[in-house]
Length: 286
Ligand code: I3P
Image 1 (spheres, helix red, strand yellow):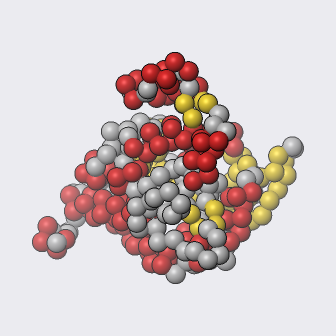
Image 2 (cartoon, rainbow, N blue to C red):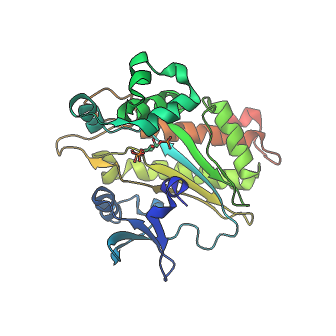
């Protein structure tokens, strides 16, 4: 289960050897190939090359859920924006209009749409993605919770009201069943990721858009976090490197990934401090 599979299971298959096969994307394959030689390798599903099945080509990936019993999964989409800069250019030059995205906006908040948009009953993809970013915690916290699958297989996708760190912490407590050991395992994993990102050539040289952190655990206390979904992650020109912890302005290609990671680490810290059985006191955390 990944962010993509929460919305389109058709893009995935399981292979006989227990690998996950994800529909080929040239952009994603390039990232995974690079990541297998990068300090981030321990944080991404291992990539085993390509395979053709019928008419389609697939990327072979380790199954992140292998060994977990009744896994609980949360997908957090990282960064302060989920649209690529090329989407801005497309919207200005050859914008195609999306009625499905208009429908989704109408359902949630008809007043967000202009008279013109109502008249054409459609919006550009950029307009929709920017609206999603502004009306979720993406633009403020640098991440948003895309979906959760609980141990009974039920999927929850509506986290539009999660706009503050305090609300995100409530979701983390719910998702982890307030188990302090699981929360601590997640916290350590994110700190380790934060260290690995500092020495990562991949991270310095790529604009990471629409990528998620996948949280997975089960009732026996296995817990891990993986970087997934690189279909919109692209290299920056040779002469530039990204900081990832500054706001985006057009042309900068900054993604705010580290803003999101810092928020998530803070939220996990809060969750640990209030979870029953936590030995951390309020004084220790200051
Ligand atoms: C989708 C979400 C995805 C986006 C997708 C949207 O909306 O914004 O990130 O895919 O576009 O429909 P929602 O959040 O309401 O599920 P990409 O990130 O790949 O652009 P799509 O319909 O063109 O796939």
